[in-house]
Length: 141
Image (cartoon, rainbow, N blue to C red; front, side, top):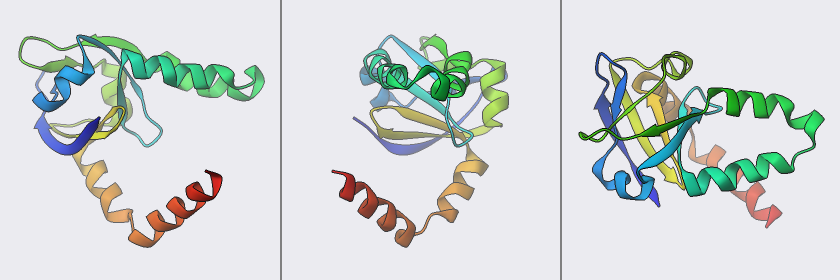
């Protein structure tokens, strides 16, 4: 399980350091794609398969925009010898990644955020809002 929040610098080639505690679970090869919240999502292959299986269950007409959004931005990736991942220029532009990024463990995958976007997102969250979401989810179980 991916847990925690880390801040890392990007290099001139667009590589981002993946924290050591994430690397073993991530595996040698993995998938990077766009996230909904102007971030990037990094999936181990096993979790990617589960994720796309859910997307593929949606009716074609309703899900075509979701499929385009997710699949067109997805790329196979791997870590270099120093534990960095090379992101595509399109991925970096989408997430508006600058010199410093936040790498978050969010359970079964990782998110990469521009640090200023993540800081803004954290400030916009309230305990009451999270509680309300949790109560709605609990009702569905």
